[in-house]
Image 1 (cartoon, rainbow, N blue to C red):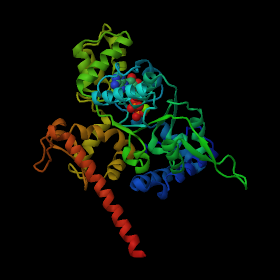
Image 2 (cartoon, rainbow, N blue to C red):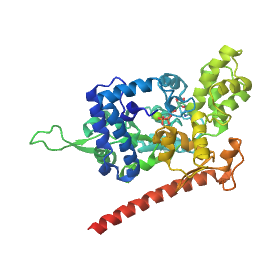
Image 3 (cartoon, rainbow, N blue to C red):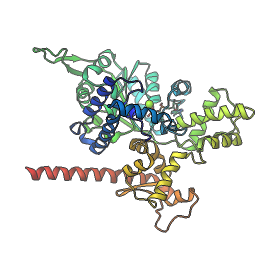
Image 4 (cartoon, protein in one colour):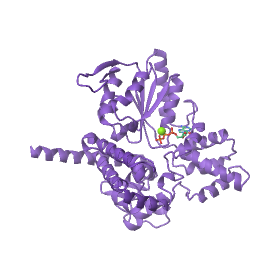
Length: 448
Ligand SMILES: Nc1ncnc2c1ncn2[C@@H]1O[C@H](COP(=O)(O)OP(=O)(O)OP(=O)(O)O)[C@@H](O)[C@H]1O
Ligand SMILES: [Mg+2]
């Protein structure tokens, strides 16, 4: 029972009964199948989760019991050292390490080059930058990019996020306050409620909205002319965006995992800012274990820096980095107990797979979303896991890493084909989804 029901409902532990009810209703509305045509499977799964959470937290006795039990629970996956999501208290630390210009932004050469050109061109023409959509796994620098762009354009940026915008009225202040060329950053844009999304269509395209001021009997929508702003949307789940919304972004950039040499650069840069000495070999040790993610390399640096100061002479050498990270339970590929848990469960309980994500999550007492967003992408990337239409399987390389001889039927993925395998998996998934939708459509037609 390690699910965090409070997190599922997006409330804090001290929430009142009323707040719990409201949070539940709001989520239930957002997840209604009508509002999630693009990713119904996800919405259904999510709905099940919030129902489960509400069943417990919405009942006084059950909630008390849950609170007591969860007090004695071990750390959740949220607090993993190698989790790519930001943790509480990390923001300030992150802030100081954030690159402030495109030149300082390490790696992602193609994205940086493209943005460089787009920014220069818009400046030369005195035109507003196209709306920009940035997608990619957590911690790769989406938010950082948004700030940098505002800086490079020398424009104001205002920050909001999908879940914070419940009604058109919530976006209006952002739209009307934006001046020509200003940036509105919408994080987690895949979580925009449908009404808000539709409201944004004309705002993004024609810089016009029709807004109803009050809801009286004679109220009617009034046209508002807006200044030419730029929306930067960030998302870890681009597939969940509806087509019309996605199409309104003139520039779309995908951020991919960073390679080791880029992460070494980031580790050295951050050490410099933190006035910590790091040897090249030490930086490589951090980079190798950072799962391709700048946020993680910075976090590892912070841990290792403490260790170096207390247990060594303050310098991060190869040995110091190794010893410190071993203490954190992170192996030489940056896999931690949760990753090992996933691999071992598939290996031992499901004979290497295939196993459905739901069953896997249940066996591990984890949330499906955590597995899909945080654990899987990296295991897929390094070719330890394969997503097949019948479920997840672990590969020959995973067996080898776990120190066991692979069984005869174990699958092999060539490292050079990793990205293609990843894409192939993704397109299989999309195809399966489309097929399912087709079937549903066909059933409906038969009914008619
Ligand atoms: N290209 C980069 N060069 C140097 N440091 C970087 C780079 N990208 C990200 N970072 C560092 O990683 C941290 C996390 O980046 P950021 O918050 O932008 O990620 P994100 O993609 O917005 O994550 P999330 O999906 O969780 O919102 C930043 O604070 C910054 O210190
Ligand atoms: Mg972010």
